[in-house]
Length: 61
Image 1 (cartoon, rainbow, N blue to C red):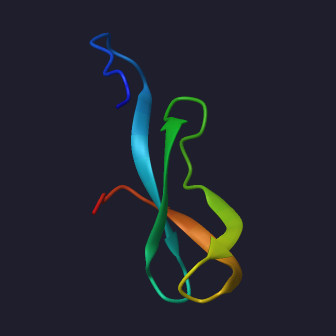
Image 2 (cartoon, rainbow, N blue to C red; image 1 turned 45 degrees about the vertical axis):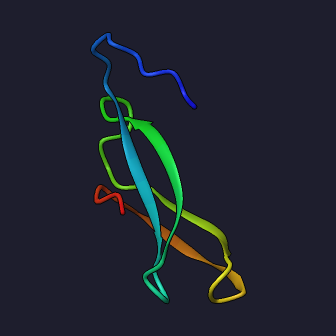
């Protein structure tokens, strides 16, 4: 299990959601002061079985 830090940081948890099938495939973190805009990556979706664009979502399922 990951260690939970008690100090205040600018890092937030985000989810990466497939833009084709809307499945949440990846969890990640980002620093909201360094990257205020939403992230987009081309990653593999196991439901679509191909590389698709994944966009940032703050809702974690």
